[in-house]
Image (cartoon, rainbow, N blue to C red; front, side, top):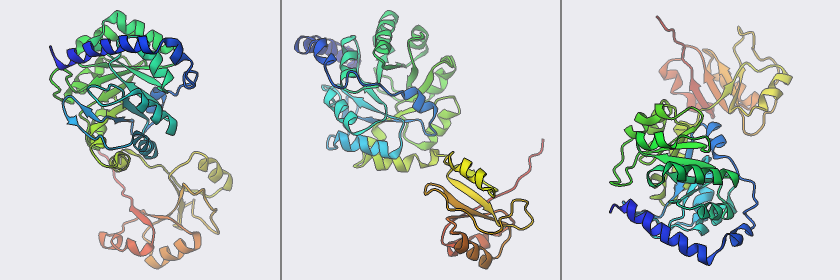
Length: 365
């Protein structure tokens, strides 16, 4: 008997006991049961990073990961870092989690929560909804096709999204059905606990485009996420890499920086255009201070919303000129768009604000 077989056998006993202690009517009376859920699928589709961060105290393969952290602190840290959602392990015996962890995370956050559990009974869906979950996990390797269909249909009737997890092509082929929302490929073999990201790369083309594709386990670097994105994945379930630190949220914020693309709009002059573009919340708004340009700025520039950095664009300008413009227009960033030398660029610290060098290139075919 594998560790997965033991987990499922124990889970069925646990669920039978919980049914006796807490009837369905008990959970349906929960204040959270009538709550309108949030869409993890939509959050992933709109995200640059696609990260689903996990709360996991321990696992059969790693034993203790981090049991000292407060689930509320972890949840708030993840939300501050801008993740798409949070996965909460609720299995107690093997992973050190609980349904109370789900409720505590729900109490301090608004983003989608995934109940990560070995679900074998519709009763567990009722529990998930009553404790604030938005999404439930179904594991194809421990369920038949009929069970997947029954559980996923029941989940959607409760307003819960369904993440279906597979490990190989056989599991994937038996599981495709319209009552699913997201398809997850687990890079960890639940029988041996070995991890291989090629599992995600190999299976991705077999997942219909109707579903949001999620890669799970073994993702420890931003480079891995960037690589998997090129294969069509929009979601990335990451847990241990953050949880093994003293501040998972801070670690996540640092790790995800390379994944966040910055947007700059340039050539601003007309007030109505500036106001319209500011509403789209770019990171930078550029004003050209090069006289030959048709967009050359003369006179004053407007004050921008706090989240937008006012940027001056210069072409082979003197440092004295740049410093004068920075002060007059209260610039927060400088873009050098000429033939400035490396030596010139090394003097950028005198500007007192962020500066970037732009490069021109040509492609030959």
